[in-house]
Image (cartoon, rainbow over all chains, first blue to last red; front, side, top):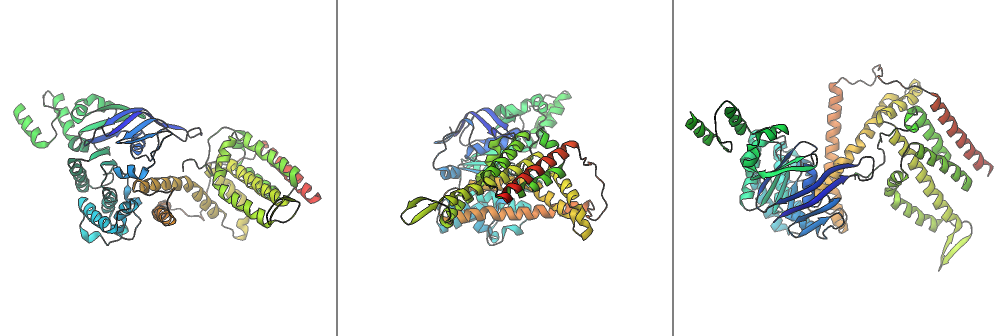
Length: 281
Length: 266
């Protein structure tokens, strides 16, 4: 048991003319070591939901439990920093959070806030930088000279350097080129295989199919469905109803099956798909 | 951050919302001048009541206005202390050791508080009841007579409207960066002075960078659409002066005149 939401409700700007209910009646459990995708339309409450996990937002009703930390409307754990270290959150377009003179200093910013000594921080920074696919030649460069995709990697390294047990990512691949996208996703998959809990907000169903174990579908501030990936993409009609695109492979199988084939819709990669088609013919 | 109310437009349906922006800006100016006249207790009662009437007519909740006063709390305490120490007029109210608190000091501080409160009340009503675009248009019209002496009325109005337009955006941006840095272990509320400075730097540097980026993008977008401040422009939206505007302008002039008379006579 890792993350538990109990009847969580979140209202923005309560009691003002801008009052807006972003989440209502959220009951949710995310097990340790899973790789979970959170999908749904813009404005369905995905970003609000994930900000509850490291207590950037407090629920206006209900409770959120992350390991031993319990956050309710009135009760905030005293050691927020420890929770923030446990659950690292990478925001959408995280490159705007860079501010130091060199990449090394910027990545070391997190550990230093957690009172890690200089030597260890340096070592962790180098490791995080390599994790996101950049080499040590970048350490002394100013972060503002980098390309957009490289800045994104440095910013993600700035979170990974704290060695969080739970890694939460808000559309980490938005605006990256296809090559960079897969490289970044591979980084997260590797961390997941090392035992970390990974939660990804994404609009790209190909990533969901390829990388994640389970999915949470959000709609209008509520959880519409929480299920395994296989289960999710079997419900083709349901997804099309919510106007969520199918992954390319699933869509291909769906179209073939509409034409009279009967291919297993849980196939995830091209090799197996080709095999299945060969058998069918 | 989301709770900052200063400068936000509230889409309500009130009589104040319907007043012409030119009239509203002029009224604000007149009333601000009146507020700064020291007309004693009676004067502040009159103008205070008038301002509260305006807030009420604009259908704003008084708590909403009070909220925008919150950031001033520090300044007010500072002023209070300064006044108590510096002003040595009127009767002695309290004597603590060699400290003496004079009645005038208390009154002056009170007046400053009332003035600040009324100013914030009125400006909040103006921005909450007028769309930024209307505000700019009104300002431009009011300033246009000065074009004759080479005053760039349109440019100034454009700059003000851009500044107003970006207040909410910058607040949002600030909140975003604060959250992102909080995720990296920054504590904006507590910590030693050194930690606080480092926290502020981690907020300000990205904020500056993104503001400059935004400014550049906006300039490019304006240029791409061939924006030329000197060009003759027509408006889709025309301003119409109505009876309501005349009535409201006249009534505020009357109030201001009363205040000025009281302060001169006293």
